[in-house]
Length: 129
Image 1: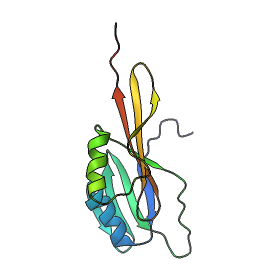
Image 2: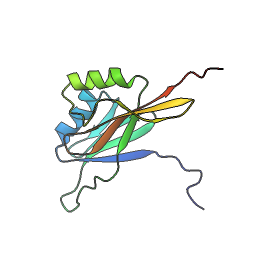
Image 3: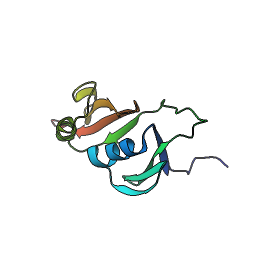
């Protein structure tokens, strides 16, 4: 047995402040809120994957090594909306890879606790025949 047929069900995003973390993901990013179990956990639905925004127990150190890339249709519109809500981006949306079929655009930012996040768009390019 292995994980070849597994899917990602839930991701943990560690936060220091329960209310501040919940508010950022619900109110600023607009990710659909599912439920909370105060004072440690809030759950969100991000395209079918559950995000657990949670305060770590005092005996554990929060690991912040993984980045979460949110795939969006219109990276420029989402970037503008989040910028208006006070999100600080490391860079405006920029092209990072191009093939004859698609362009990959990114814009990186962090949440209030320093977790690495990014917007990602895959835009189809038109080919000349």
